[in-house]
Image (cartoon, rainbow, N blue to C red; front, top):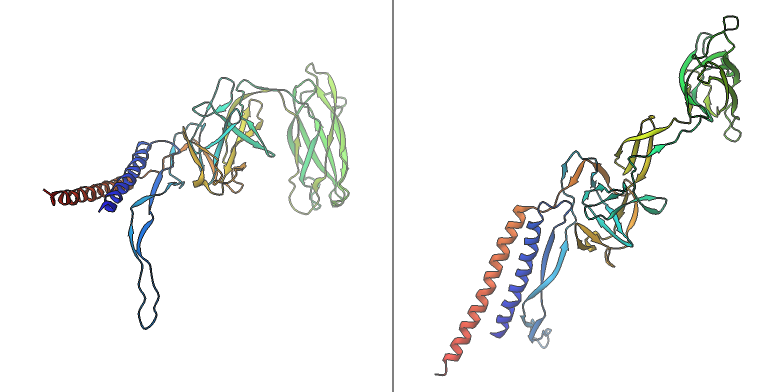
Length: 406
């Protein structure tokens, strides 16, 4: 009789805990990156009235007789299933499609989140809504991500013009290739040149390379005076002995119409001489000065800065943490998770390396299903009511016992 009384009390406590978890799930149905909780129960120890006995002396075995003493909470799980994405169109709203957690830090405190609604603070540092700094990953090192919208990329002079592609051995004498290229001099000024490639002895891999600055005045008496030409023979491919770079001294317009000599190197190790198409391409290095126009975040978490001079440079790459047992993470509030001894150590790398990809302009919604939560709420409510009946029934029996003596 008293056992049933306390069994009912334990059941009421358990279903109250279940209702608490359900209420928290419903309250966070619109919380970005929220992962719902789930309660499971287990029975408590049993009181053994008589033990089991085996068959013996032509007598069958007897099962044990036990009376249960109620139930208790077995676990409150974090359900880490992927939720659907909501498109926001905001470039700093990020979602992880697949495994992984964004890494955020405040001082030495390192935590993890699936909520990717990030912002730039007054220093250009990428932070979450609580000001915790989002981390980038590079060669095993975590760093704060800073995007300086007022940054200026300094000019860098051209030192080499790398040649890639094929110069066909079956080219005709009229098979010329003309390409416009841009070079930057030591003062950061840009010059547009014509590069003309003409076959001399294509079967032997011999071609003529000419650079022309069309902004220089032409001397009628010597029209090729401003043309820089050199005949180059492409050697047979030998990975152990690549051909050395060729050197050119270009003639550039110094801005006044006068000639300015400018020396560059031309690596030709990536040129081939095979029958087929003429598709050699010149790739100069160097750049003019530029300012940051915009930036975007790719699927691998790379933050690409687009500069006014046409360059696109990677400003950083978002870190993603992965855990052996993500359900073992501890909720720390503010959409954050903390590592525990049962979650495993955070394995940090970039998106796509055994992890999910990053979707820019989207946010992961809560994985709470209202229909499921309301169904569980009804079950918990009826379970709570049933346990109250156990208590009231036990109380009625106690009252009858008291009434035996009047």
